[in-house]
Image (tube, rainbow, N blue to C red; front, top):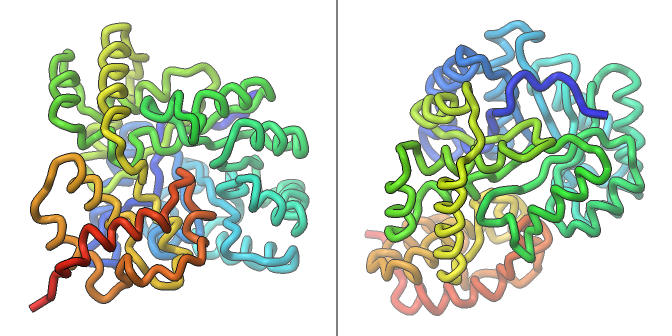
Length: 376
C-alpha cells in the first residue's frame, strides 16, 4: 500500500547547507532557502543526526520548526549506526533527536544507510522493533530505510521486515545501470515489494551539475534548463518515486529546482537520448565515483578529508589541472594527509559507493605529496 503524506515530489535535503566557515552554518541564508522552498508549495525536509557536523537537526529547528506551524511541513530523520551500540541506547538517542529538531514526532524515521554489514547490527540491537514501538506510540508516522548495497541485500531486508513502508535509494542517470550502486535493480526490488521510493543523490553529489566540456555541449543543445533539472527530472519520472531529494547549498539552487518541479514534466525522448550520451562520456573517464557525502570522514580516526582529496584527483586526472597540488595543501591543512591513512578500513565500510578508499589514498600520496605544498 502506498504511503500518503507526500505533498509534492521534491524534497529539501539538509545535508549540504551553506557555511560561513567550516562547521559554522549560515542560519540567515538557510532561512531564505526554507522560505523559498515553502512558498513554492514544497514541504518535505530530510535530516540525520550526523549531517553537517552534527548540526543539521539544530539548523532545521532554527530555520523551519520555530518559524512554521508543525502541520505545514514533513520531516524525515534517521537512526544512524555510528550513534548507538545497543538497544538501550536507541530510545535516548531518538528522544535527543526530537529535542534537537524541536518536534514531538517525525513523519518518517529511517534506518540509516542500510547494507549487509550494518543490517546485522540493527537486527542484533532490535532497532527495527524499537522503531515500530515508537510508531505505535505516535512518535513516528512512517518507518523506512535508506539503503546502500546490492539489490539482493535490499530484497532480504524487505523480506525480513515487511513493515518497512518506504525505501530511500541512490538513483541517478549515471548510476542507473551501475554494477556497484545498482540503482535500477534496487528500484525494481522496491517495486516488487510494493514500497514507495525516495530518491537521494539525483545529481550524484554535484557530478551531474559540473559536467565535462564535451558533456556540457550535449546538454546545451537542448531547449534550456539547468544541468540539475535534467538529472532530477530523470529520477522523478519513474513510477512509484514519491520524493526526490536535493541537498541545496544556496537560495539560487532552491529557486532553480522549484521552478521546474512545481509543474513537473518527465524527460522527453530527446532529453533521454542526451543524458544517455552524457552517461557514455562519464563511463569513458574512469572517474572516482565519490559523491562528497562525507560518511567516510565522519568515521576517519585521522580526520583525512577524503572527498576533497578525491575531487582533486578527478580534476587532475580528467582535466590535468595544474593547481591541484596547491589545493591538496589547502584541503589538508590542519587535517590528516593521505599518507597518514592507517588502513583501518572504517571509511570503506561507511562508503555508499563502495570505493576502495585505502588504495586511492596511496595513489593520492604519490600524486600530491612528492612535493607537498607548504603553507606560508
